[in-house]
Length: 154
Ligand SMILES: Cc1cc2nc3c(=O)[nH]c(=O)nc-3n(C[C@H](O)[C@H](O)[C@H](O)COP(=O)(O)OP(=O)(O)OC[C@H]3O[C@@H](n4cnc5c(N)ncnc54)[C@H](O)[C@@H]3O)c2cc1C
Image (tube, rainbow, N blue to C red; front, side):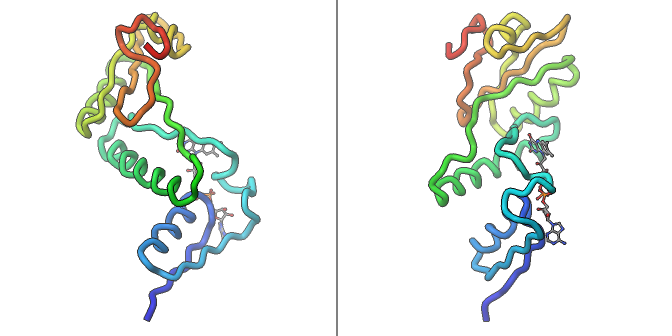
């Protein structure tokens, strides 16, 4: 007897749940009250930020797992849905260290840009003693390198 599942809500979370259940062989029905692409939920529009830098390693690990699933979805759908560009977080040192720590915990490299580099390569103007954290990961196409003098792509 085949197993069935009904998922209520066709936003990004319900759609992802329905997809993964179907991958596991369930016969899935996804119920959505509005038309595809509607603007009455949270998943409307064409872009979202995807990030690995979280202060909690759990979230960084989950994001890494999700990265594989986004790529799987691209392969199945034949279209690019996730474009990685690299990311810069800035703020006081005590706020940035947890990001470095959780990235390091899952083997993702990061670096620190001084304010001049941040302005030069990421267009980020950081005031006073605030420093930028650039996420430099193998999976991420990243234009900024600490110590690069701020030149994009160097
Ligand atoms: C402006 C904006 C910017 C954001 N930026 C980011 C970002 O950069 N990065 C990021 O990770 N997240 C971002 N988010 C958050 C992210 O978009 C949401 O967390 C995500 O879309 C939530 O998806 P969801 O499926 O839980 O909810 P929804 O997208 O709201 O989907 C719920 C769906 O359930 C349907 N539904 C509800 N009740 C019923 C019912 N009884 N019967 C049938 N259907 C029902 C609704 O119609 C809706 O389509 C942003 C959100 C907004 C609004």
